[in-house]
Image 1 (cartoon, one colour):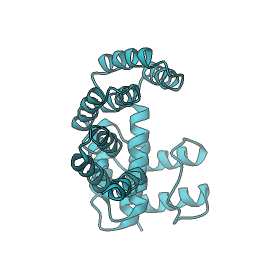
Image 2: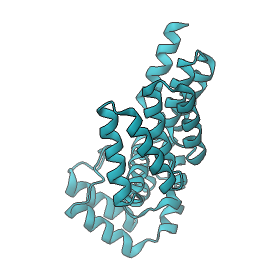
Image 3: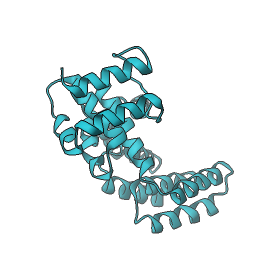
Length: 225
Protein backbone atom coordinates (compact mmCIF):
# COMPACT_ATOMS: atom_id res chain seq x y z
CA UNK A 1 0.00 0.00 0.00
CA UNK A 2 1.32 3.45 -0.93
CA UNK A 3 1.75 6.16 1.67
CA UNK A 4 -1.03 8.14 0.03
CA UNK A 5 -3.53 5.30 0.45
CA UNK A 6 -2.42 4.70 4.03
CA UNK A 7 -2.84 8.38 4.86
CA UNK A 8 -6.22 8.42 3.16
CA UNK A 9 -7.59 5.32 4.88
CA UNK A 10 -6.42 6.66 8.24
CA UNK A 11 -8.16 9.94 7.49
CA UNK A 12 -11.42 8.19 6.56
CA UNK A 13 -11.27 5.93 9.60
CA UNK A 14 -10.64 8.87 11.92
CA UNK A 15 -13.40 10.92 10.31
CA UNK A 16 -16.18 8.41 9.80
CA UNK A 17 -14.96 4.94 10.59
CA UNK A 18 -15.98 3.86 7.11
CA UNK A 19 -13.27 3.71 4.44
CA UNK A 20 -15.94 2.96 1.81
CA UNK A 21 -17.99 6.09 2.54
CA UNK A 22 -18.74 8.07 -0.62
CA UNK A 23 -19.60 11.46 0.84
CA UNK A 24 -17.06 13.09 3.12
CA UNK A 25 -16.65 16.71 4.16
CA UNK A 26 -14.13 19.13 2.68
CA UNK A 27 -14.33 21.33 5.77
CA UNK A 28 -10.97 21.73 7.46
CA UNK A 29 -10.80 20.15 10.91
CA UNK A 30 -8.25 18.34 13.04
CA UNK A 31 -8.40 15.15 10.97
CA UNK A 32 -8.25 16.92 7.62
CA UNK A 33 -5.36 19.13 8.74
CA UNK A 34 -3.38 16.02 9.73
CA UNK A 35 -4.21 14.47 6.35
CA UNK A 36 -3.16 17.62 4.48
CA UNK A 37 0.10 17.81 6.41
CA UNK A 38 0.96 14.17 5.73
CA UNK A 39 0.20 14.33 2.03
CA UNK A 40 1.91 17.70 1.57
CA UNK A 41 5.16 16.37 3.02
CA UNK A 42 5.33 13.39 0.67
CA UNK A 43 3.51 14.39 -2.55
CA UNK A 44 3.72 17.35 -4.88
CA UNK A 45 0.65 18.54 -6.74
CA UNK A 46 2.29 17.30 -9.97
CA UNK A 47 2.53 13.79 -8.52
CA UNK A 48 -1.07 13.93 -7.35
CA UNK A 49 -2.07 14.92 -10.86
CA UNK A 50 -0.31 11.87 -12.30
CA UNK A 51 -2.09 9.65 -9.79
CA UNK A 52 -5.44 10.77 -11.18
CA UNK A 53 -4.68 8.40 -14.07
CA UNK A 54 -4.07 5.41 -11.80
CA UNK A 55 -5.86 2.16 -12.63
CA UNK A 56 -6.68 1.79 -8.91
CA UNK A 57 -9.96 3.39 -7.87
CA UNK A 58 -8.83 4.16 -4.32
CA UNK A 59 -5.66 5.81 -5.59
CA UNK A 60 -7.65 8.05 -7.93
CA UNK A 61 -10.04 8.86 -5.12
CA UNK A 62 -7.24 9.67 -2.67
CA UNK A 63 -5.43 11.87 -5.21
CA UNK A 64 -8.66 13.66 -6.06
CA UNK A 65 -9.44 14.27 -2.41
CA UNK A 66 -5.91 15.51 -1.74
CA UNK A 67 -6.33 18.11 -4.48
CA UNK A 68 -9.52 19.18 -2.72
CA UNK A 69 -7.25 20.71 -0.08
CA UNK A 70 -3.99 21.22 -1.95
CA UNK A 71 -5.20 22.03 -5.48
CA UNK A 72 -5.45 25.40 -7.18
CA UNK A 73 -7.06 26.84 -10.31
CA UNK A 74 -4.67 24.94 -12.61
CA UNK A 75 -6.23 21.69 -11.37
CA UNK A 76 -9.82 22.77 -12.02
CA UNK A 77 -10.01 21.38 -15.57
CA UNK A 78 -8.23 18.05 -14.86
CA UNK A 79 -10.61 17.50 -11.95
CA UNK A 80 -13.46 18.27 -14.33
CA UNK A 81 -12.47 15.25 -16.39
CA UNK A 82 -12.75 13.12 -13.24
CA UNK A 83 -16.45 13.99 -12.93
CA UNK A 84 -17.18 11.13 -15.34
CA UNK A 85 -14.84 8.59 -13.73
CA UNK A 86 -16.21 5.04 -13.66
CA UNK A 87 -16.30 5.18 -9.85
CA UNK A 88 -19.04 7.21 -8.18
CA UNK A 89 -16.77 7.78 -5.18
CA UNK A 90 -14.14 9.38 -7.41
CA UNK A 91 -16.77 11.46 -9.20
CA UNK A 92 -18.12 12.73 -5.89
CA UNK A 93 -14.64 13.60 -4.64
CA UNK A 94 -13.82 15.42 -7.88
CA UNK A 95 -17.01 17.47 -7.64
CA UNK A 96 -16.27 18.45 -4.05
CA UNK A 97 -12.64 19.23 -4.94
CA UNK A 98 -13.73 21.62 -7.68
CA UNK A 99 -16.15 23.31 -5.31
CA UNK A 100 -13.45 23.65 -2.67
CA UNK A 101 -10.95 25.15 -5.12
CA UNK A 102 -13.59 27.58 -6.40
CA UNK A 103 -14.29 28.72 -2.83
CA UNK A 104 -10.62 28.94 -1.92
CA UNK A 105 -9.73 31.06 -4.93
CA UNK A 106 -12.40 33.63 -4.16
CA UNK A 107 -11.16 36.76 -2.43
CA UNK A 108 -12.95 37.84 0.79
CA UNK A 109 -14.56 40.65 -1.22
CA UNK A 110 -15.71 38.17 -3.87
CA UNK A 111 -17.33 35.92 -1.26
CA UNK A 112 -19.00 38.85 0.47
CA UNK A 113 -20.29 40.31 -2.79
CA UNK A 114 -21.57 36.97 -4.08
CA UNK A 115 -23.46 36.52 -0.81
CA UNK A 116 -24.96 39.99 -1.20
CA UNK A 117 -26.06 39.12 -4.73
CA UNK A 118 -27.74 35.93 -3.52
CA UNK A 119 -29.53 37.85 -0.77
CA UNK A 120 -30.74 40.45 -3.25
CA UNK A 121 -31.98 37.67 -5.51
CA UNK A 122 -33.83 36.06 -2.61
CA UNK A 123 -35.39 39.45 -1.82
CA UNK A 124 -36.47 39.78 -5.47
CA UNK A 125 -34.35 42.92 -5.88
CA UNK A 126 -33.33 41.74 -9.34
CA UNK A 127 -32.08 45.03 -10.75
CA UNK A 128 -29.63 45.65 -7.91
CA UNK A 129 -28.61 41.98 -7.90
CA UNK A 130 -27.76 42.13 -11.60
CA UNK A 131 -25.84 45.39 -11.19
CA UNK A 132 -23.76 43.91 -8.38
CA UNK A 133 -23.19 40.66 -10.28
CA UNK A 134 -22.01 42.63 -13.32
CA UNK A 135 -19.59 44.53 -11.09
CA UNK A 136 -18.35 41.22 -9.71
CA UNK A 137 -17.75 39.96 -13.26
CA UNK A 138 -15.71 43.06 -14.09
CA UNK A 139 -13.62 42.82 -10.94
CA UNK A 140 -12.91 39.07 -11.21
CA UNK A 141 -11.97 39.05 -14.90
CA UNK A 142 -15.09 37.11 -15.81
CA UNK A 143 -15.00 33.92 -13.74
CA UNK A 144 -17.36 31.27 -15.04
CA UNK A 145 -19.13 30.87 -11.70
CA UNK A 146 -19.98 34.58 -11.64
CA UNK A 147 -21.46 34.48 -15.15
CA UNK A 148 -23.53 31.52 -13.97
CA UNK A 149 -24.74 33.56 -11.01
CA UNK A 150 -25.78 36.46 -13.22
CA UNK A 151 -27.46 34.05 -15.62
CA UNK A 152 -29.84 32.93 -12.88
CA UNK A 153 -30.68 36.52 -12.00
CA UNK A 154 -31.49 37.29 -15.63
CA UNK A 155 -33.42 34.05 -16.03
CA UNK A 156 -35.49 34.83 -12.94
CA UNK A 157 -36.23 38.30 -14.30
CA UNK A 158 -37.42 36.74 -17.54
CA UNK A 159 -34.48 38.01 -19.61
CA UNK A 160 -33.99 34.59 -21.18
CA UNK A 161 -31.83 35.66 -24.14
CA UNK A 162 -29.38 37.48 -21.84
CA UNK A 163 -29.38 34.55 -19.41
CA UNK A 164 -28.62 32.22 -22.32
CA UNK A 165 -25.65 34.40 -23.30
CA UNK A 166 -24.27 34.30 -19.74
CA UNK A 167 -24.65 30.51 -19.60
CA UNK A 168 -22.64 30.19 -22.81
CA UNK A 169 -19.93 32.43 -21.39
CA UNK A 170 -19.81 30.34 -18.24
CA UNK A 171 -19.42 27.13 -20.24
CA UNK A 172 -16.69 28.65 -22.43
CA UNK A 173 -14.73 29.49 -19.28
CA UNK A 174 -15.44 26.12 -17.66
CA UNK A 175 -16.44 23.37 -20.11
CA UNK A 176 -17.12 21.05 -17.15
CA UNK A 177 -19.79 23.25 -15.59
CA UNK A 178 -22.65 20.76 -15.68
CA UNK A 179 -24.81 23.26 -13.76
CA UNK A 180 -24.42 25.86 -16.50
CA UNK A 181 -25.32 23.20 -19.09
CA UNK A 182 -28.61 22.54 -17.33
CA UNK A 183 -29.24 26.27 -16.97
CA UNK A 184 -28.56 26.73 -20.69
CA UNK A 185 -31.01 23.92 -21.40
CA UNK A 186 -33.62 25.68 -19.31
CA UNK A 187 -33.13 28.82 -21.37
CA UNK A 188 -33.58 26.92 -24.62
CA UNK A 189 -36.65 25.17 -23.23
CA UNK A 190 -38.29 28.48 -22.31
CA UNK A 191 -37.51 29.73 -25.81
CA UNK A 192 -39.31 26.72 -27.28
CA UNK A 193 -36.18 24.98 -28.60
CA UNK A 194 -36.67 21.53 -27.07
CA UNK A 195 -34.01 19.92 -29.25
CA UNK A 196 -31.28 22.27 -28.07
CA UNK A 197 -32.50 21.93 -24.48
CA UNK A 198 -32.26 18.14 -24.68
CA UNK A 199 -28.68 18.37 -26.01
CA UNK A 200 -27.72 20.57 -23.06
CA UNK A 201 -29.21 18.13 -20.55
CA UNK A 202 -27.46 15.22 -22.25
CA UNK A 203 -24.15 17.10 -22.14
CA UNK A 204 -24.61 17.83 -18.44
CA UNK A 205 -25.29 14.16 -17.82
CA UNK A 206 -22.23 13.21 -19.84
CA UNK A 207 -20.02 15.55 -17.81
CA UNK A 208 -21.35 14.46 -14.42
CA UNK A 209 -23.70 11.46 -14.48
CA UNK A 210 -24.78 11.96 -10.86
CA UNK A 211 -26.38 15.40 -11.36
CA UNK A 212 -30.07 14.73 -10.71
CA UNK A 213 -31.47 17.98 -12.24
CA UNK A 214 -30.18 16.93 -15.66
CA UNK A 215 -32.01 13.61 -15.49
CA UNK A 216 -35.16 15.26 -14.16
CA UNK A 217 -35.12 17.80 -16.99
CA UNK A 218 -34.76 15.04 -19.59
CA UNK A 219 -37.70 13.17 -18.05
CA UNK A 220 -39.85 16.29 -18.22
CA UNK A 221 -38.97 16.77 -21.89
CA UNK A 222 -39.68 13.11 -22.62
CA UNK A 223 -43.06 13.44 -20.94
CA UNK A 224 -43.95 16.38 -23.15
CA UNK A 225 -43.03 14.61 -26.36
